[in-house]
Amino acid sequence: MQWTFLGIAILLEVCGTTLMKRSDGFTKMIYAIPMLILYILSLTMLSFALKKMEVGVAYAIWSGIGIALIATIGVVFFEETCTISKIIFLSFIIIGAIGLNLSGAGH
Image (cartoon, rainbow, N blue to C red; front, side, top):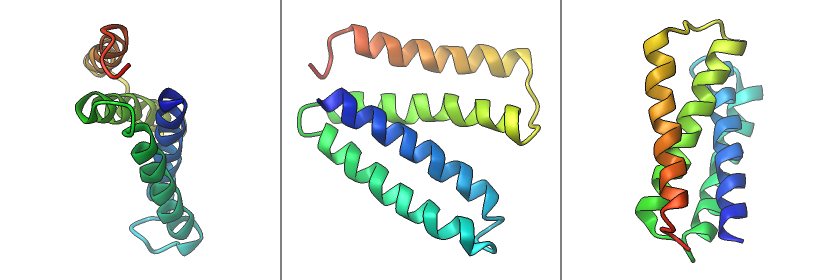
């Protein structure tokens, strides 16, 4: 169940970060208010995951996968640059998160 909570936490955080970009520095409250709600929900789900997971592993996966997803969203939806080096280093983040999962840490 902790992995489910962690997955939900990641998705909520990524949605919140996407809305942060849309909020234009908190000038568009239609995006800023849901962003804050999503962050609160994300941290709540992360705290549920931490009941059965090591904090270092959970946080590394939460932040690592979140970084990779939001970077992808930036390229696809916000026309941010996509370079070979960006792809390589994002791949390292994903490989690290998978490695933590496969290592059995947090089970």
